[in-house]
Image 1 (cartoon, rainbow, N blue to C red):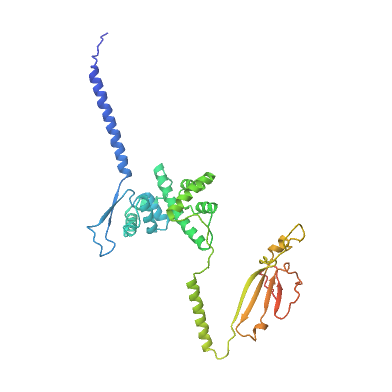
Image 2 (spheres, helix red, strand yellow):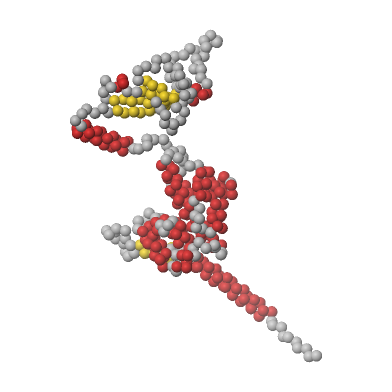
Length: 356
């Protein structure tokens, strides 16, 4: 048996080789991290022309976008909003932290960039936009697109409710947000969105995203203020137009016209008493002034329909009607003097159509 004795390398050489290897591994990690960072920050340059002919700009302004117009999330927003370039441009600006107000031509330029990117990407990319995600990054991109689309539609719904005089609360907004989740999204992403809006059933989580929503879309907590249905100027213009038309009919008519107007008002059976003089209770010598009434009588109301005209001779003949449900005033009204043109109509519902 022949034994071969291996010559051991000096320890200094081994330490030097280990140091070089560690430095190579460190440089490799840095390069890979830099490659991942550059791939995430792949920027697209958008040129902005002057918004007005009289503006003096030294060449076009270039805006570098961290999220390019051909990103999957941007194209998904463009598709989910029915190819609305304005909303897609707003989403693109929000993703890149851009202010849509400065410069003024930015919204139009971003909208054009989104449309150009949509036409430029392969058809297979458009078809596969809403395929089930295969990695967390695709899931995050579809989730971001779905969040923006739902909040945009929620903003439109909220403005419509405010126009009706309704200020929806937290539960209504959460329920509406869950209802507005796009059906085109994969089921996995749609479930994530619903859980996000519901906040796991925790009130605090719901209030957090609602606070961000109000901040981003310009809403605030408050009550819907009660005011006239239409502005005073518009009401005045409508009244002027009506009377101009009536004057025209008056001028063209050969016979005298009788103008009638009927209006209704709600009347309480036990109205609130006005301020007057009542006796002061001193050592139980004077009874306390109380208008005796049950809870049902305090809530009971009926309708008074009054008809008026401009002819003083016809006015006493026009009907004045008390409309009741048969319980407020009774089937035989307890009215001392029911004379002349004062009538009482009893009807259980307003859609019966059997008035006298």
